[in-house]
Image 1 (tube, helix red, strand yellow):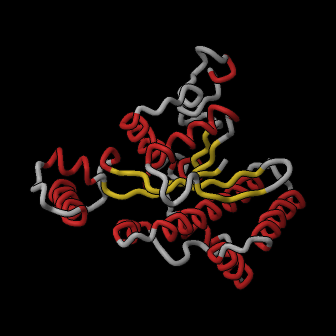
Image 2 (cartoon, helix red, strand yellow):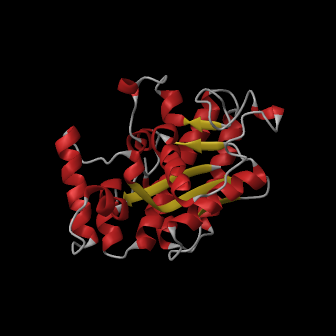
Length: 256
C-alpha cells in the first residue's frame, strides 16, 4: 500500500503553546507559527509535531485490481483519517511504500495518533505477539515492511536525496499537477479540501509508478511484468471519471 499525507499548521497547538491572542483567526496564528519557525531555523517548515493531517491518500494493488483513493470523506476529522489508516494496517498488515515516509509522513502520523489516542497495535508490533514481525516490522528503517523509496534510492545519505516530483518527471511520469505542498495551507484556509485530496492522490500515483520502476531495478519485476503493471495503472485511470485522474492520465499520455 503506497501512501502519502498532506498537512497544515496545528493552530490549536499554536494558540496554546505560543500564548497568542485568542482573538486571532487561524490564518494569523499560522503566520505566527511560521514566523517563529523562521526565527529558530531560517525556514518555515514546522517541526513535525506541529503539523495537522488534512488528507491521507493511498494506492492499493490487489490481485484483482488497482485503486487510488483518499481515506474518509472531505468532512472527516483528523482523528478519523488516522484511525482509518491504522485500522487498515491492523486488518490487513500491508507492506507500506512511501516517499520520505520515514522522515515525515510516519513521524507525523505517530504524533497525531498520540494526540488523538488512536490505537495501532499491529503497526507497533516488533515480535512480542507475532514472531514474524521481529525481523520485518514497520518501525525498523532497514526492514522491508515499510519501504521509503527516498531513503533507499539515496543510500540513506541526506545529500543524495531527491524530490519525488523531479524523479517522477525524470522517469517520464507527470509529476505534480495543479498544486504543490507549499500551497496546501492556503488551499485549506480557502476551504478547498477536495483540491488537497486530489493533489495528494496524484502524488501517491507518482510514488506508485516510481515504486514499479524500483521493482524492475531490483529484479522483483522483469521487463514484461513491469509493462504489464504499467498497463494496469493506465487501464484503471482510463476508467476513472474523476477529473484530476483523467488530467493525470492525459498528462502522462503527452509525456515523450
